[in-house]
Length: 98
Image 1 (cartoon, helix red, strand yellow):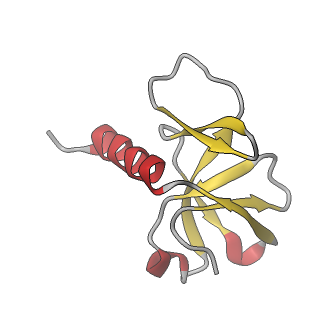
Image 2: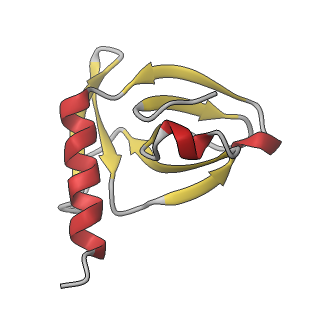
Image 3: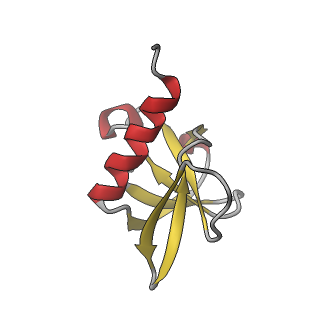
């Protein structure tokens, strides 16, 4: 089971992802996640955080639903709560009605 804030590596998918969906939703075998990238780009929706002695970025404008029930995965770390809050706020800003 994955929890909100986990960093996961999924078999068959390059890179890592930050789980942003609530743990209760993840029980369905699906998750909502954002990719984690190593290089800063021109996107204003990147959230910086420390990971494995480096600075990584969560691409909060690249939200994906993934079916992890059909793939092997492992938890490789955790997003700091302060960064997770910023990611969720950025996603909300993108999809707000008004």
